[in-house]
Structure formats: structure tokens, C-alpha cells
Length: 137
Length: 137
DNA sequence: GAGAATGTAACCCATACTGTTATGATTTTT
DNA sequence: AAAAATCATAACAGTATGGGTTACATTCTC
Image 1 (cartoon, rainbow over the protein chains, first blue to last red):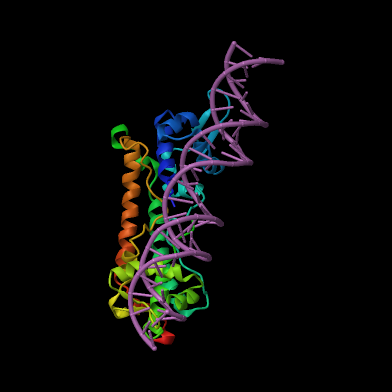
Image 2 (cartoon, rainbow over the protein chains, first blue to last red):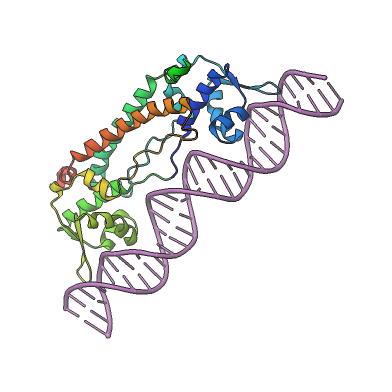
């Protein structure tokens, strides 16, 4: 599949909203990302539901950060996107009773679980404020 | 997309060939995996080109291991499959000159690279002999 | 030469992110 | 009250990739 770039884009977006006085419309953000406002709204839906941002309708509306960037971690954003799978690779489950398949999958599964744990653990230790480029800080 | 299960399936396959006196036809292997012989041949092509297995055509032909399982690592198989990307997630490159995008991607990229290095490093330390279930060893 | 096997191309299918259009709902402004 | 701005959401097409299937060519043994 095409790789899922939502996390990268969402972080990019949220920091731009912050640098943009904490408010921006889907249209404005879409131009910053080179995409369509509907794509922005679709990605933002989860963050709105989790209370990280607020949507204001009508003229002079748009998106507003509901928390300081220092209080949102990369993991929060990952989870708000629905905790999508990190991996393009997975385990075959053709014959769950086959001892060979079980042995292979136990070993690979442990490697994948370890990598996933490590990545999400690092996500949890990085706030969005950490990602603001030094130039603008 | 559906996750790529070729690595898991290939390891499963190769061990079965070994346990099957070191030889098996695509048809036999396909039945073990619950798939089609063409899928088996397609996955095996890379391993054949790299010299890990040999294909024997004609009656009483099939696939033959060209090395001992102890001399093939999981990394070898991964590479023979074309070193497919481990990750379903990637970095957005909408505006390569945007400092925010660059900062976000530098941080995420480092996390992904670290995870990838760790996974492939573990792949390199596991031979296919290590994956044979104890029962049949 | 018959038959068994691999080699490979060509297609279709399923999935998931992405992009776009269309329509509706809500809110501010006048 | 009407108009305009903005979000909400459904619906659909595009794209890419792994997987499954069919078809046909090739090679090898008997």
C-alpha cells in the first residue's frame, strides 16, 4: 500500500496551527499541506473527539488548539488517529495448528511486538512542543 | 492494505521443505500453506536467484534447499524477498522546504530508522534452524 | 513423445490511504 | 431574515500492493 502519512501530516498541521496564533481553517491548513480541506477535517475528527482541538463553525471559525503543544504527545496523536498499525508486515495464519507456523510466528511476533513497544514508548516521550523548529521557537 | 505475510510464509515453507527430506514441489508446499503453487513460485524466485534454493524442473522435480537451514538467516530471506518495507507508516513530503515538516520528519524518521535497524539486526541473528519446533528437532 | 514440473505474464480481487464533489448543518454578519 | 463562512459527512474514484487464479511456455525424466 501507499504508506500512511497521517501521523507526520497531523503533527505538521498542529504545529502550524500553534504558530498561526492557535487558529486556522481547514482551507488554510490544507494549503499548508498541499491537500484538500476534507482530508484535513477527516484527519482532525479523532483529535476533536479526544479533546485536543476544537472546531468552530461559521465565519471566523476554524480549528483551535484545546491544549498547549507541550501537553500533547506524539502518542496522543497516534492514538487519536485510531492507533493504526505501524507495520506493513504481518504473520501468516494459514494453519494455526501447524507447529512450524507457530514457532515461526512466535519468533517474528516477539520481534514485531518489541519494535512496536519501542516506537510507541518513544512516541509517548515526545511532545509537540519538542517538534517546533528552533528557528521559530 | 492487507499486511505482507511473505516473510512468515517463506520461513514456514523453507522449514517444511527441510522436514520433507529437503525437497518439495510447489504444489505440495502450496497445500501446506493453503495457497496456490504460483504464489509459491513467485515468492521463491528471489531465494532461487540468491542461491538459497534450487528449482528442479520435470518429473520428480521441485524445490531443493541449497544450504543447511543453519546457514540461512531470517535476514537472508527478508533480503531475498526484496527487502520490503517493514512499516505501514511513512513521512509526508508535501513541502520539503518547510522547517516544520523537516523537524517533524527528522524526529519520526529517526524513530523509524532505529526500529528498522533493530528489527533487521535481530533478523540477522536468527537462522532458520533456530525456528524448527523442538518437537521435530 | 507424454507427462510432470517450474517460469512467467496477465488478470482480477481486496484493502486502505488519499483526493474530490456534493450536500447538509451551524454560526456570524448585515 | 438572508447571506456567507465554515465544519460534518457521505459517496465515489484513484492508486498501490499483496494475494489468488488462469493460461501458456519451457524444461526435464521416463
